[in-house]
Figure 1 (cartoon, rainbow over the protein chains, first blue to last red):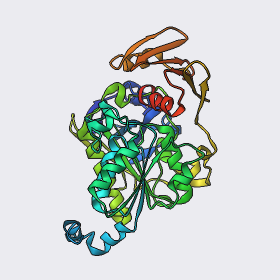
Figure 2: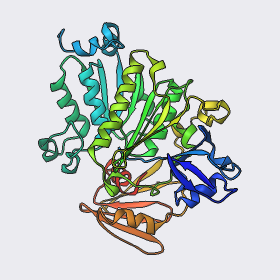
Figure 3: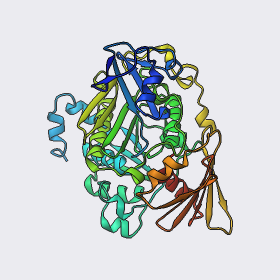
Figure 4: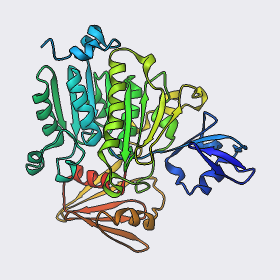
Length: 66
Length: 341
C-alpha cells in the first residue's frame, strides 16, 4: 500500500506500524518526531499505531548543529 | 537617532509602540556560532535594548564561512566569540547595551544567565545545553526559540511555557552522544543558517512586541538543497502528551541529569568527558561520520580520532579522553563539534 511520507509517495507493507515504517526507511529512531495525519505520535505508541493506505506521515529528524 | 528604525516602525505590526517595547527588552542568546551570530546581528540592528551573548568558544578561521559577525582579525587573535561579537555589534548599534559572557553554560549557572530575559534564543551546537535551556525557561516561564542546522538542513521551534509544547514534549529524550551528524563532520552551508536564524529572530520580535498570536506554532523543517519546506503543526498537541517538566514541573536537567562530567587529567594535558546512562556506541557509524574531518581508527573497545592537534579517544559508553587541552570548556566544545552531544 502507499502512504505519503514528508510529501513523497512511499510504499510500505500492509499492516505496518510506525516503528516498521521507521525501520524500513533506515532511520535512527533516537532523534525523530513523527506526525501521523497531523497528530504527533508518542514514542511509546510507535509499536502499536498502524499506518493505513493514504495516511500522511511527517517525520522530523532532529539535528544538534548551530 | 530618529531615522534609524524608521522602516521598521513603518511596518504596521511593529509601529512606534512595538519599537519602544523592543528597546525595553532583554534577549539572551546562548551560543554565538553560526545561528547565534545571525540572531545577535538581526536583533541588535532591530534595536533590542539589552542583548546578552553567551559563548564558551573562540573564533577560528573555519568559522568565517558562515558566522556572520566575525572577521579575519578575530580568528587571528583567537578572540572569545562573545567578546568579538559584542565588539562588532557595538559598532553596528551604539544605542543598545550588549553584554558578552564567556562561559560554558551548565546546570549550575543556566538560571542565573537567563534571569530577567524576555526571550532566550538557542544558538548552541548540542542537546545537553538545549535540554538545560528548556528546563530553565519552563521553570521561569521564559519563551525560548530552538534552532539547529547541519548540511543544508535546519529546524526551528518556538517554545512558550504554558501555551506550547516544549522541546522535551516533542523529542521526549535527550539524544545520546555520538548518534548524529554535526557541522564539523557533515559540514554546513551558510544559507540554511541564515534561514533558520532569521525565523528565530522574527519569532523573537513577535514575542517581544507581545504578538504571540502571530507565532508559527510549528516545528519547522527546511532543506535548502532538496528545497523542502515542511512543518509539524503543534497547535493541536495533546495536553496528556506533555513531558514531565511541563506537566509535573520536574526539571531534572537543572539538577544535573544527563550532564557531562569533565575531569582534567593532571600531567597528561587531557580532559575526560563522561555522561551516565549511555548505551553502546556504534563505532562504525561514528567513524564514517568522522572520516571527512580527520584521522580515525577503531577497534572493539575504543575509537581514536585526531584533528587540529587534538587526540580524542572514545570508549563504547561514549566516555572520551581529549588530549591537547586541560580546559574543560575547550574539551566540551570539541566533543560537541565532533562526537555530537
